[in-house]
Image (tube, rainbow, N blue to C red; front, side, top):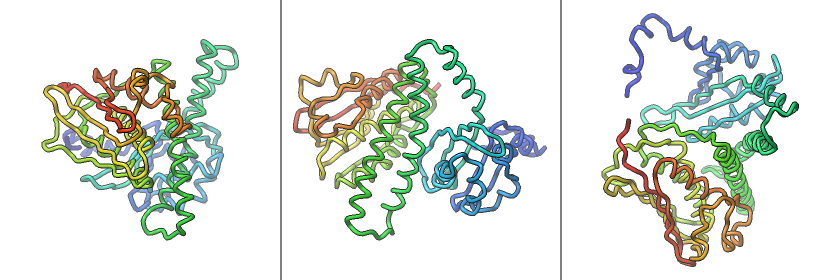
Length: 379
């Protein structure tokens, strides 16, 4: 659907876009792929004490010294503004604390922008959440929260959000160090790979904690739309390519021909499902093993299978695979530091889409996890 078909011509003709842009209570920032700021609305100036007109045309790297002073922690600027420019794939949502020109808490959402399939830059939307923070603190202080479980869940949510920011900053820097063109001694590369594996595992655990809280509090919502499931699965495979390569594993994905029609699903939640399945396949498959991802249209459904040559699962433990916190003895021996929430979360999301998830496995011979989704007409 073209942009022109979604905007009345008079909006552009009567120069309404500029006042709309500045009327937004959200701070809006857009930077090109080369790091130049191309757009900033008035709210950016309110939040950070900077003149938006002076930001436009400048490199974000050149603004770092002045801009970073607005943040309570100097590195927060690099974690949520500078480093994400190097990430052409991931979206994120973070809370940061601003010290100047006024103390406030800001929720920052960011996503890559693509033009004709090519990375064009990155967009940031920033929202003042200071009032929400204050209300939550008052509720906790005066017993307004319903129970100790609610306080625990709120603590887990806040703590997980705060942990995710520094962990992602570490991961982005490791991506740069381990990227092509960086010559490092073999021992250093191996040490960095070990750190990368630990960081990505920690991020996965933090994400699982956040999702488990949403499920427990029944606040997990689906935002369905017409979704090309091939694109979703392909992105997840690309995101995990480095982790598989570090273990000399083959991670294969052949796009089906023809492609299945778009499914009526939540794209972000589907990414979560296949990320958990592929991540597990990498963790529990020996070095040099093979992981294959396949998509097959079947009658009124679409099957997505993740097949590995890993450790497999004993028959007696298969019935408990999707229980919260459950981990088989063999899985614990191979990877003692996982959350035990990944398959539980995957099943919850698939069930919410009226789908099914099943496991075909034999101990010592690998596993196949099959997600089946209805080919429901897009509404």
